[in-house]
Length: 204
Image 1: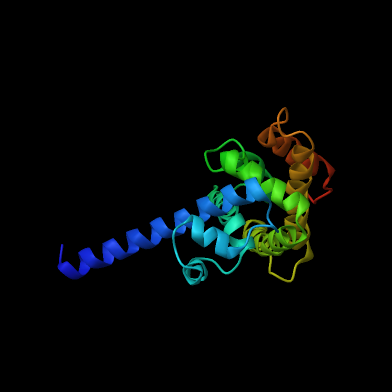
Image 2: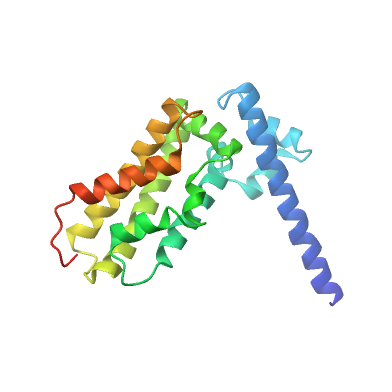
């Protein structure tokens, strides 16, 4: 390895470590003090960096709160895009739930904290649902491909919105009782109900 490559490797590693420290500090402070009460300067101080460093890694408190959740959601969508082409949109969604990618729908301890932030902080929920509009668009593109139709067809757009709405219903139901409900099982039930209720032509 050249000196230049080694230097780049160290810099990238340092950047990743700083980003991880900021994210960890933010989640800990949000859990301890509340989202609105936590300032960017508090996060930077806890991570032992300058406040300006925070903005080199994240645009806002909302982004740092949701970065892992959105990464997991995008990994699930990538898993869906990798399903066999012969599966219809809902069949692919249902099959995905029981794969390693689908397991990303089950939140860990940090995601439980973040779900709570989404539930009670309008700025966090607004950022989350804005991000989910991008997810809906990505789903619609994938559903167009699986259905063999163009992007002006209403059906893949409608179905993508229905899938995202179902996942939102799962989130709300799970948040009402996070200790005894299983979000992965709720997702299975939601997709099954969606498949039963959609009166699609058999060709779809």
